[in-house]
Image 1: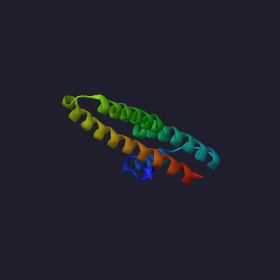
Image 2: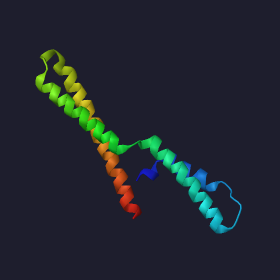
Image 3: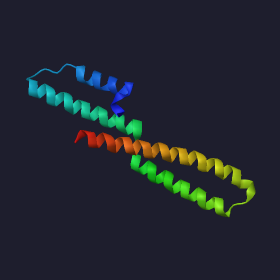
Image 4: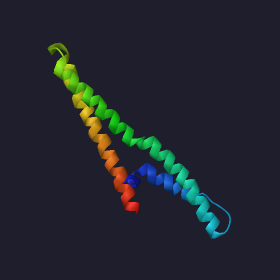
Length: 108
């Protein structure tokens, strides 16, 4: 789960432990709203837009593969290295998307 990350757990702990004065329902509502804002920011900074990242990596990988078919041997080694790196980045982005949707389904 993403929330097992030490920084995210600290974020939750720090946000939840700030003192709010009022009745129980008001305190709960205020803390949840504050936590929601901090978690959105953390999610954006930690993962960005996973779907856009997947599409970007797939497009880049396709362009590399097309270049491999039409390129000379001099550039071939560079393109193969780029393809390997982009494939690894795509795998990471797909894994992040999987974790994102897995977390969403656990909330239901």
